[in-house]
Image (cartoon, rainbow, N blue to C red; front, side, top):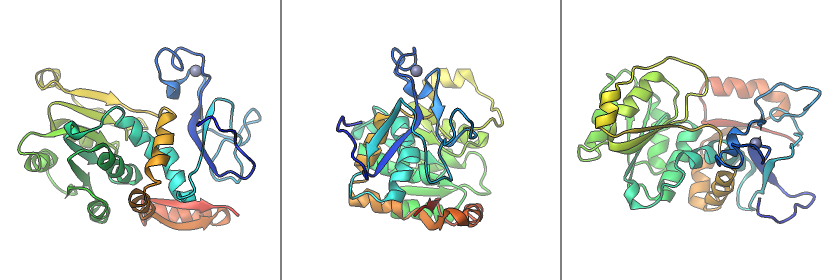
Length: 286
Ligand SMILES: [Zn+2]
């Protein structure tokens, strides 16, 4: 991505998708992540046409149109792996937002994307970062990592998120909310917690799920913006890697990565994920 040719033995990571660089979405729309002939790593079965699609394998075949970044020396393999997924996606969600005027950021769902949400939110200068999850332990991690305030929403009534956000924003509401859980009730809560003129970024709803009722009048009069975020522009991968060259951010992401498993122990890795032992588990090779 930086134009410097790669050398044998360089540690690299790569964009989640390969795109053609020529279609309407790659050029005029500025959305190469939605290219007409998009190929997405780790999201499709092995085939004769593309035998090594990424994920749970020692090798991956990088298609033409993939953006490749050299991993900076100070960034661990595991943190680099989360940068190419969670980190760059959060960068896309907060694209163009920077400076004190960003105000209050609300994050709903504090898995690895939420952890990166705190990192990118702090870097961009949001003056308050509010985190919501159903898991108290994850929220304690978010507080240690720099969140301003947290709410465990488990068992609470639907309007609890709005009340929590208003309490921490002088009654105003969140300037930006990133919804990472994919739950319709959480989308509704995020929308209700926005300030007038606020923006809701939908990231977590990556599989079909429940619909929700939308009150167009409320959204007109409150001047809210709702935006879907899917995949990311490759520039956000380079920015995510750059962010974690800072030790403070790097170690915070690293602390969310649990035990590392060799490929032959992959069943244990899945069990660990089911037990929610860490924000991510790592599969290693070697
Ligand atoms: Zn294209």
